[in-house]
Figure 1 (cartoon, one colour):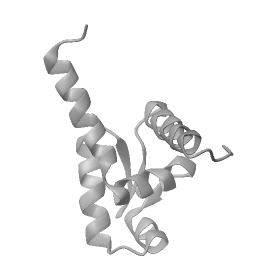
Figure 2 (spheres, helix red, strand yellow):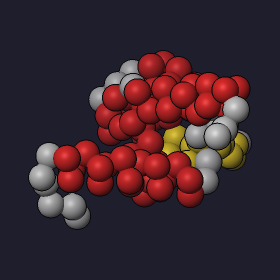
Figure 3 (tube, rainbow, N blue to C red):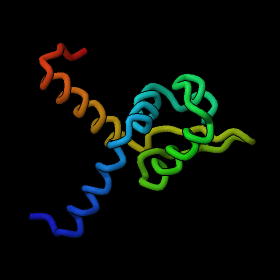
Figure 4 (cartoon, rainbow, N blue to C red):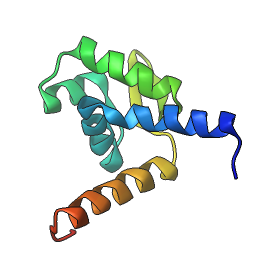
Length: 101
């Protein structure tokens, strides 16, 4: 059995996935790294709101960044995040009886 502290950290980690805007950002980043303006345009959400969500994702080590001049690009931190999203979507689709792509 894992320690209470570790399980609390796991609970905090999963809270990151509780916001629909953050999930939409992560879904976009599964295909390709993007900058704030690209994410903002695709999701039709203000750049300040996207920046706020990306800051939370970065602080939780869910996304990483690369700065090239003035532009900061964001990507998923590692394949664990991709797997969590993939399996989460599969779980929800199976629960609803949808066919998985």
